[in-house]
Image 1 (cartoon, rainbow over the protein chains, first blue to last red):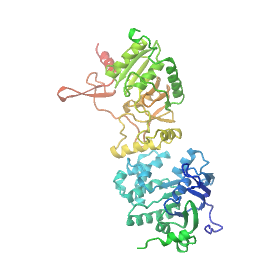
Image 2 (spheres, helix red, strand yellow; image 1 turned 60 degrees about the vertical axis):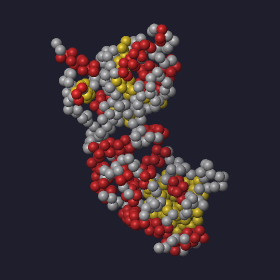
Image 3 (tube, each protein chain N blue to C red; image 1 turned 45 degrees about the horizontal axis):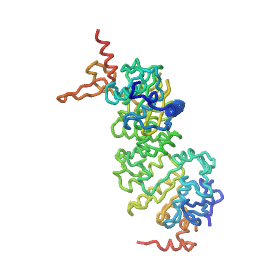
Image 4 (cartoon, each protein chain N blue to C red; image 1 turned 60 degrees about the horizontal axis):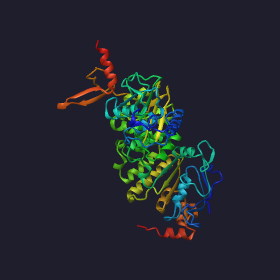
Length: 269
Length: 281
């Protein structure tokens, strides 16, 4: 079941076609992802939900070009309008894409940040990779972005080690968005944070995504995150996408028995 | 050669090893600043004492060469004395302490103050050839960064210096961009010496024995110290004059004396001697 798309909807940004992945060490019939297809449009946020081990992170990593899938294609429309097959690109171009047009927000901020350099250097890194060599400008940009993600710009020279979990996650978002990516991939961006921090962070992500007209693919096991952020939701189970549709529809009127189980097992306070 | 060195080949290494090192050196000269792996041999010297430099010297030295060995600018420190004596024994070449007379100079941590010429070759001893090491300790990943010229991460370190100290704070081993392509570690020379590498008429060879890497800068090659547009690379004046020759435009060492007094003297002892001889009638 695919989401009903309006005929005049803009051309998609990302197309995943019949993607399958089996880890080399896994058993013959054990596929981490099996036959996954999805489309992402500009400005759209799509959530991938499912239990642990359902293959959602593997799917995300395949999309990000970090894992070469066993079968299937990931196609991306670049800023210049050219469609590219992410996994057929030379590694150099893929890396360039991933640090300019894409962002990747890790679940653990420590993996996405350089923990031994200051917050400012973290935000500035992508710009320096693009050849910006003006310290004053880099620092000003870093302060500006820290403000945007509601971090105190006075702390631009502090190490991320001195930041709390929520602050680190904000810093990671700033670090990714500084090059104005078109597509942001997020792997459990709020997991491991306490509930009030989660709520604020979700608010911020929603605001930034809308303001910057980003497309985002968000992996989460938390249906609340999907409800707050995502226009559309995909439900994965045992490597397959079992249901996809508008988030409200999926959560209010789940069709697949597994989705029904998932929705009914949400603990309401 | 005397009885003690009988049975040893000229310059200690056997001819096949020297050929292997020369092949790597040719590649290194052809791709300025690029690290070339080589089959580093065990030398009668501990790692960290110049095993890389000594192998490069052994591979390029000829019977007609005049060798000078310096350690921290000085000709008479343990490292310099031993390496010089080693080559005197295993090659029989003439050695000197005078920079102008030498055709081959092996150095640790300094470039001589006297400008080098086309007739000279300088060999640097390198402890860590990878300039990205502190930011990307994985060798395979660092190699990729070099291959794709992803040097933004290098500036992250410089950014961090300015944020913390208000200036670029690599007092030594300040990374350089060679020939507009490869970022290279200049070995732990003071950043004072970095400008000397730029378009130097002499051939510069670098050897890292433990890390098994060679690299080179051919004569007259551009060598630019990394910096920011608004924080350009500059040599910080030390603010002292040499107590022996009065020089203010050379690199000075601070020497602690009996009673706690401090004395600043030229680190390049040969240059200091030359200056003093000039002054005396």
